[in-house]
Length: 111
Image (cartoon, rainbow, N blue to C red; front, side, top):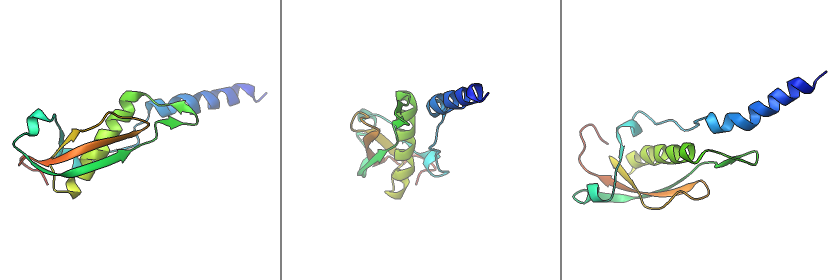
């Protein structure tokens, strides 16, 4: 009988995406911090990045906290290419996309 195996595989496919984190910080991106607009008032703005990840897998919505974490990680990774050491969310995460401002605050070990 194949049904128990098929059901187990289906359950794994449906619930595994919520537990996975697919985006990893690069070694350079690890030194970039996520901050608030008030905390970057004295910093130099370098630009902005729009990042996106899948917020649904196989029609199943991923956990918003996982999506938000991955969006911030992508923004941190991208900030390095603009010479930034700090990112600030400039929009809410929507449909797996978010805009971040990139700043150079002179953090030690940045950029």
